[in-house]
Length: 298
Image (cartoon, rainbow, N blue to C red; front, side, top):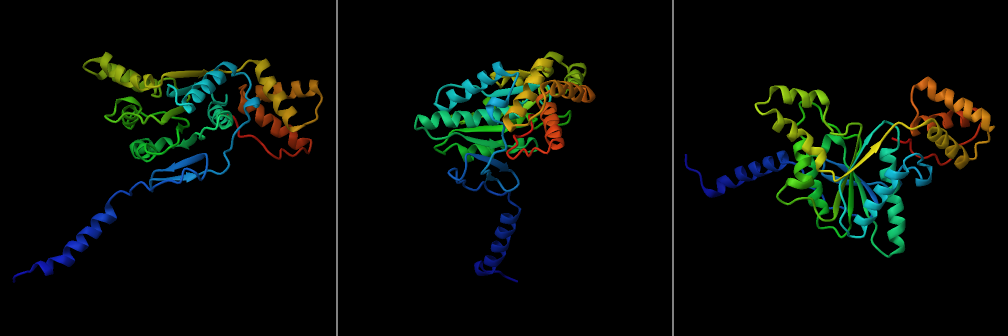
């Protein structure tokens, strides 16, 4: 039985349709004027606008003055088109790492707005979507805006190789990081990889030094390291007092101090998160509405 070119037409059309269905979704164009913050949805290669960011006012972040000033200065330089570094905010839980990133974004946009410059955009990418960073970068590269790509609680497990994608995007790829993009990440780990993973590499590798160097070099891609450490008792009480004053919670100073310290003792931690949880408790007991609560410090 002979076939003509006309007979092959429908077959080729079906093959093309099947290939189109199984192909990964193309990155959709984004309307960057829709908002100043976005969340990256890797499954559909789309940026979802965030009309209202859940953030803490910069004035409520206590006990991190040095790191606050460094990140704010770095972000402001980037927004003005000057050299700036990728930043890794690492350390104790609940001390305001992600809160500082979001507060700095708002503070810088207020500042450059007075200068007549375009606002910078904050783009959150989830840890499990790190491998799609190249697609996200391609979407942002031609845009007229500048972007802070933010990944909260970034770390990698022993069998996870997606950290290599992050390394390539930050510095080592053939295209490199776009000039209008900077990367901020928070983590409880300074080197982003578990210690046992690094020690295992050292014990099993032919050249242990090179194996460990491969792992540690990821954090080296971040030019700015900002450490967050457990706060002192005075810093913790300052956080509590700041929240109470901000929301107008009326409570005797001695009672506030005693209860706040007892609250932190029962939880075995002093942090911005612990301070906020205590203020929620005392406000509830006193019948005070926290009408515009800040995000929980992280």
